[in-house]
Length: 124
Image 1 (cartoon, rainbow, N blue to C red):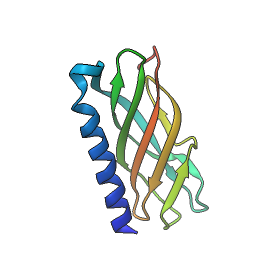
Image 2: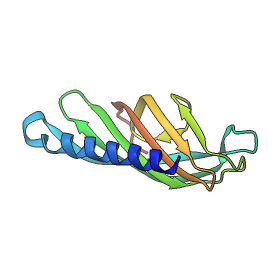
Image 3: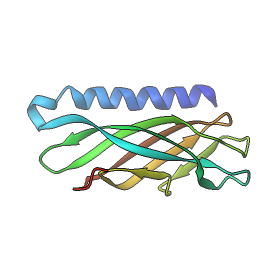
Image 4: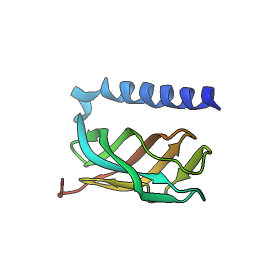
């Protein structure tokens, strides 16, 4: 399982680098947004009381406002098991209206979010 998550993170990083290489041509820029990632209760449900603040770093298309990026944090995972959430309410990203997400929390609480959406006006 550890090898798969490492491969996934490497693939995401490679995709971000490839997209970043086209910044000058396509009107793309790297931006960061304040974010909050939920923790996990003992039943495997997401719990904001066990979460952590972090930074979401995304590649923004300045023409359309679409953003794709990632965030990492250390959260509390009371379930003791690796948890994977697809398109769930993982917490929030200030200034981004999320339309698609994949959120994983390891048994020891290492959380990784990959999300895409639209840049919103509000950036708390």
